[in-house]
Amino acid sequence: MGFGDYPKEYNPSVHGRYDPSVYYGPKDTAFGDVKLSDLGSWLSRRKYSPPAITAAISRAWWRWQMKYVQPKRTGMAPLYHLLIGAMTFSYAINYKRIKNHRHRKYH
Image (cartoon, rainbow, N blue to C red; front, side):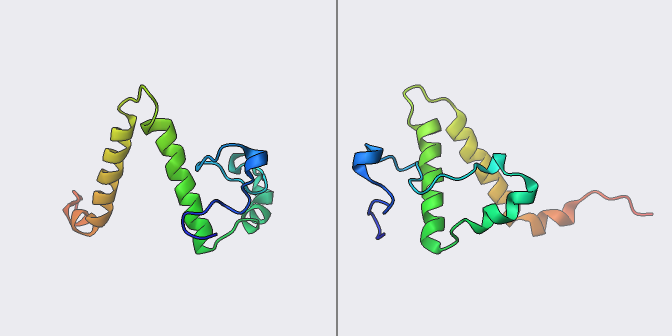
């Protein structure tokens, strides 16, 4: 699979129109339905190569886009998501400076 190509699991005659937010590989148990005893085997069935991780991030991005940004009547949710993400990122990168300003009681 090269950059910009369809996934090799995608078959237009079977799947119809291409949707970038759908995983066309073999179906597996959803993460929410995995039991704790089966978690190790579920994780071992995942692909951890850089192209697979990039494809998973891309699918998550498209799912977010299609759910919150691209509907006809979108609300304030995408703006809130971006603002909260920016605040969390800012807090994380400035944590070393912020932690010195804690209020503590010294005895």
